[in-house]
Amino acid sequence: MGTAVQEYLRAVIYIGPQQKFAQCLAKALVEELEELDVVKKNDFQDVFHSIEDLKHRAVLLVVDETLCEHVADAFGRLRRVFPTQVICMAFNQYETLPDSARKLALDGTVRSFLPMNLRLDIWLSAVQLMINGGDYMPPEFLKASGKQKQVNGHSGDHVNGGGHRHSGNPGTGAKLTAREIDVLALVARGCQNKIVAAELNLSQHTVKLHMHNIIAKLGVSNRTEAAAIYFEEFADGAGSGQPAR
Image (cartoon, rainbow, N blue to C red; front, top):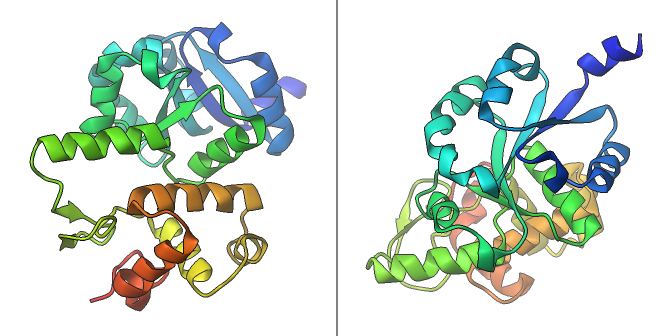
């Protein structure tokens, strides 16, 4: 009976050397989120051999940085099988990350990166955010992406979450997700994190993580500056993912 129940659990699929996803992290994740399992696969072929089982259970795919050279080839098939799940890359140190992994971030193939050395509560919140469909991008990736755009001559023209282009001021036109706009809308109205969490049915850790991403994407220093951008660009489309017109 135990095996039958296990087969129908939602699952975070980890792809890579199994020892690199510490058992203590897997245990903490299972304890934090009810009815969740962590399934470890050595490589993409291992995943594709189990596709019939995994495609109904997967809520998040975590690909280790050691497989970054193979991500581009496997990504199309992964996306066809897992069309809505976030596919993220796990890594330990940004400084030692292979250039091919950084390229996946810069060209937008992989939109979420998960540092495996985060403080546990932040790490769990990052995973939960991605399970809920959000993207997690550490600050060092956002900074690198901004520098690359400046080198390529595109620093003044960014596409925001609604597909509209803005130019000029730092932070304007940043690509916020619909959920991030929901969070920012409440913060702009003066709501504390615990109120935002209750309104959106999120944990306070997840709200903090959203605000961390919002501030980094907008290129501002604090909540007040982020709120100012919300009223300037997004207020008319709050909660819909559309900026103000």
